[in-house]
Image 1 (cartoon, rainbow, N blue to C red):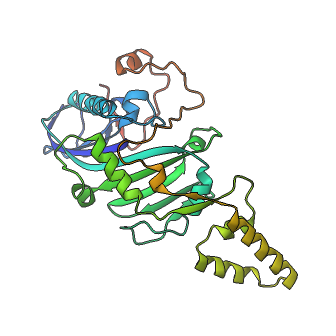
Image 2 (image 1 turned 180 degrees about the vertical axis):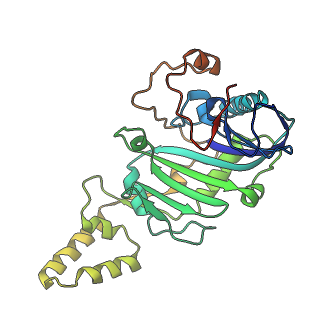
Image 3 (image 1 turned 30 degrees about the vertical axis):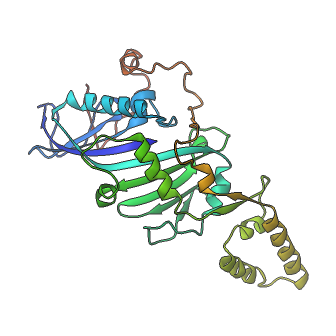
Length: 299
């Protein structure tokens, strides 16, 4: 449910933590302080439990455990009492044809973001980018080198947009966050997906809104014969009839989220220890290379 979080707090860092520089702590936690007591920290909460973010935090207990680990890592390097949430990424994953869902949303606007979405990676990722509010969809399985389609949807709220939705000083509540995530996604209109087969150009045109579809048909007519244009229009009409409804209201139940769809990296050991104490005993063989712009500080 929650992936990346950022917090701000007042604290006293240990002498080994340099000021005015982002420092990477254990389990990928990032810490910055200005030397005057103002501190900021960031972490991907699922990584604190499972070592990657392909698995979702599926309930309140897992959310609380990840936050406790986040706080534990920070407390080894800085003394503080409380913090404020400044950024929260909410996410969920769905077993579906991710590319088809992305294609169907290419011309839709996300309320609160002025511009149309940007499509990346050859139609494998789509994002609506706002200053303090953004939405992104992409194929999580493809990111992990797998072939099974898993659509990941990420909603980012920060600053004033976040403070309008949650209490920045209170603990994160899983049920309320799910309600917030669902409410924001329902602002997207229902769409239709092409049938599960190799998509032709006619399928792509059929996925467009009616106004954009008319423009595409006019553009296609340039330099082509009447017979070719007539055949293409028939292909587009047939493609429109073979589309599958995708409604976010059906995908997002009211009370509780659907069963989580988790993705494991293809080369990852299936019996990886869950507790960070066991992870520390596993050695440093899989420790990520440090970012040249960051400093590594041991716990």
